[in-house]
Length: 85
Image (tube, rainbow, N blue to C red; front, side):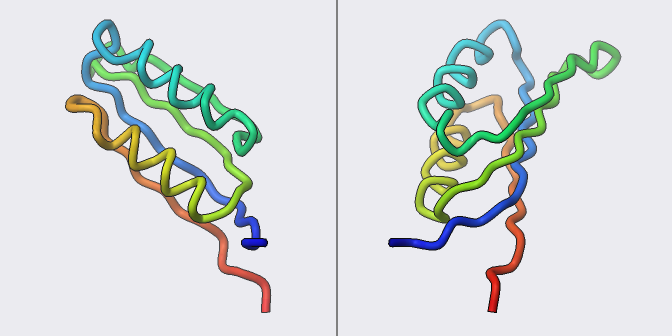
């Protein structure tokens, strides 16, 4: 069994009307590794910013960020805590 890692995923959505439903669909698909999330529209810049706390295997986290990153107007960055030991 692969060790679970804790981390966060930062998501910037450039076109909320076009991409919000797909982003939420992907986050729901990986809901078992999502600990919490906060999303804020940054109207002055015309983007939405989402921060997601995750706890899962690197494969699951990588799969989620990969699917999000394939969306044209979505930027994704993640950071995971170092493994124990």
